[in-house]
Length: 118
Image (cartoon, rainbow, N blue to C red; front, side):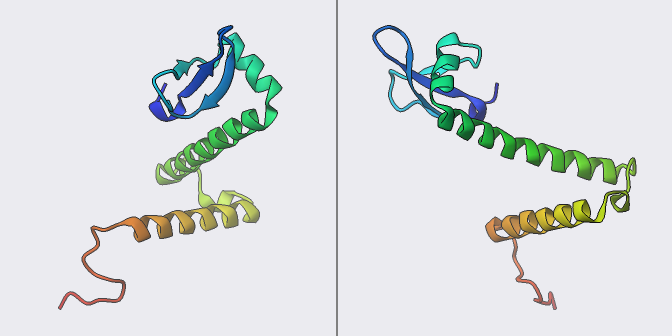
């Protein structure tokens, strides 16, 4: 399991989970396995936390799907135009957004857009 996917739990005196975090907040926090019965019970009693964990996982999974789609297109297994127009539009919007984020955080660019080399 990747560090980013880890959950950490704080347990009470009865060894039941009483809090969950995506990082250890002190040395009392322990790594948790999603199969831990106490963790499952805690998440069932606190659906808002469970929902937050799923939303974070969904965002990561969406990125994986985008990468798989790009790979399939690059390898010419599928063509972009085979997707319905609504899907094409969403994929293009996400691609533009990701590109803008990448270019905004890219400090390796030596020239600004529109700058000439000579």
